[in-house]
Image 1 (cartoon, rainbow, N blue to C red):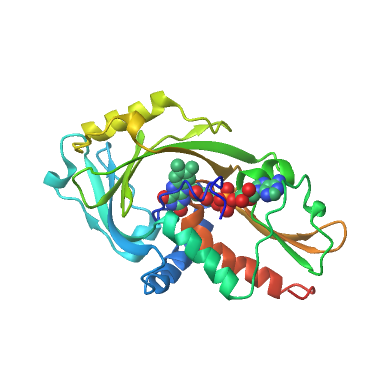
Image 2: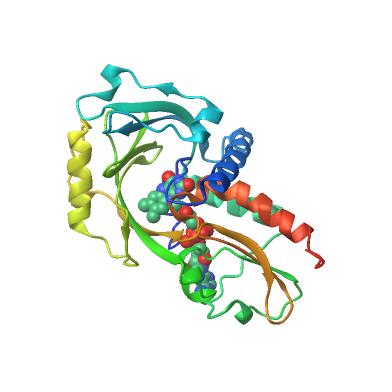
Length: 286
Ligand SMILES: Cc1cc2nc3c(=O)[nH]c(=O)nc-3n(C[C@H](O)[C@H](O)[C@H](O)COP(=O)(O)OP(=O)(O)OC[C@H]3O[C@@H](n4cnc5c(N)ncnc54)[C@H](O)[C@@H]3O)c2cc1C
């Protein structure tokens, strides 16, 4: 799995975020949640359950429909600390991407699939003329140029990984975007969410993330330059995630599956199921 994918930068916690429309995102996320519970039975998958605490600086937090569906508890006064006024706790899957992505790759190989790392395609029709009839376009932010689709917007994210923070649960706050995700290889700290296509590491952003996390009460004793820092471009799409079928000019069934913004891993199995239904329901044999 290429390390220059956005997926390799994600932590990745199950958390519907920065993607629309809400009703489809919730439905796909809940399907994915169920699949991840099955997958985590395999100890080598890199999937486990963690407690996620979602905080708000407002007096009231709008509990999302997915939290209602899964069950949550409101955070108690002493759990909110001085900075927050509302929040809830929920148990969600964590997909540790350094383990989970190679695990998925192996599943493809075990099922008889193969990977062909071609150069960047200019159009979907640049695919080799091999014997296949269905193309699934999962090009993430690359769909902006490949399709092309001007509704795809790069939402830049940056993370820093530190070895210890002195806390076992994950946390998210959206104002300003801040998160802490405990993994086997360290703690993923974020975040940044700005409209940009730049994949350059910005040292001021890293310093700001560490500063915000220290103000959260985390004990981080390493300097920014000692910690791995990564940048990824969330493939946000104005008008919503695109999962729909069409045809290439040379008659292949083309199923688009892109625009998952800040929660592609959380929607992955739900969207894959929809792709499967589109392929099965077409007149072209998959
Ligand atoms: C900092 C950060 C934290 C995140 N945290 C989470 C999280 O905790 N939970 C969560 O669910 N999501 C999270 N996300 C969002 C998630 O990472 C993305 O939604 C998801 O990775 C998108 O997956 P994708 O397969 O569509 O794109 P990608 O993983 O980017 O894969 C796209 C693939 O298409 C290929 N490609 C693109 N264009 C072309 C072309 N023209 N020719 C050939 N190949 C092409 C690319 O090389 C790449 O292999 C996070 C994102 C960021 C940046």
